[in-house]
Amino acid sequence: MDKNEIEVDIKVPNQTRYLSLIGRIGEDIAKELDRYDGDRETLAYHINLVLTEAMVNAIKHANAGDPDKMVHIYINISDQDLMIRVYDSGQGFDINTIPAPDFDTLEDRGRGIFIIKSLMDTVRYTKIADGNVLEMTKCLRTSFPPLPK
Image (cartoon, rainbow, N blue to C red):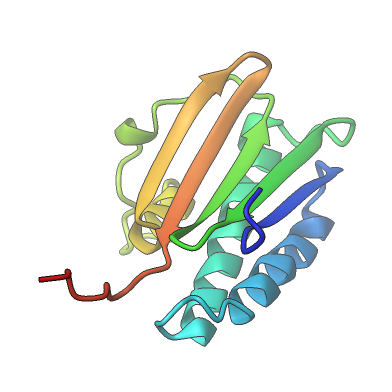
């Protein structure tokens, strides 16, 4: 692990009462990222939001609200990007077949995935040995140094 790298690995019970805790951890990490040359307050809000939405999906849909299951969250921050993985033990789904939400109705199906895809640079949901992992990445470089001549 690089000395500038940050790693956070958390497992919490499959309960919505841990949503704000996990969201705040992500938010606090983002506020301290001096390597990010964009608006850290906005980044912090976005990370809180995507973590909360990803956890709601894992708790309610993938883990079917089972309080005996766990939600595993892994956050890795390098010089280049911030990567979040949320693991679940559900059946899984094809993330690309989730339609955008209908904002004219009160139904919120697909809202969380829509928000996550809108705020993160890359989003993947893949099957792993004992479940699935939602991997979300945000590039921390909003500008790059000029190329040498």
